[in-house]
Length: 215
Image (cartoon, rainbow, N blue to C red; front, side):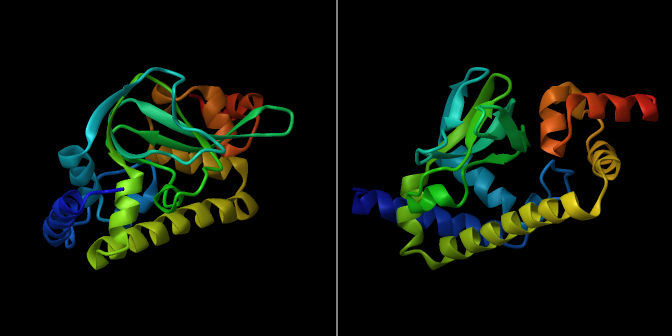
């Protein structure tokens, strides 16, 4: 159980940073577009100021499919991928995160629900982690925090839904072009195999696209 004193401490912090960051929207080019529509400064400050800096080795799990994720985190250094596994055991990449972004099984970990994805460190990572359980408990009594979580959940859904629609209305080349246009250095962060899986194409198809464009 969370002590009354700790709950008050978190509530005071939340009110302070929601007020300070509610009018802010970062103009940084993030990998995931939902960052443009959330109080990213609030989440970063919450994790950095009240979280614990944890180290993750390459290949280490931040969250595991079938288990409730323990933490929400702000990535100081490194990169991670969200993966699911097909019946044959093959890995499918459904999300990517880089330094300066937020990593979590969001919002499901806040409700104590088991994760449907695994989140894996692609490189050694430093992540400011804060307890998902504590945030989940606090949001039940803190209207401001509940609002921030609701807005963040909607932004995340919007990004995920847009990606889903893109698979039906855009060609692989169009999706690839958009990805590279926004993130020219993506191949220096993630492997060709992971990027191909994220685009839902084969590595061979991705190599062909790169070759045709002259990269």
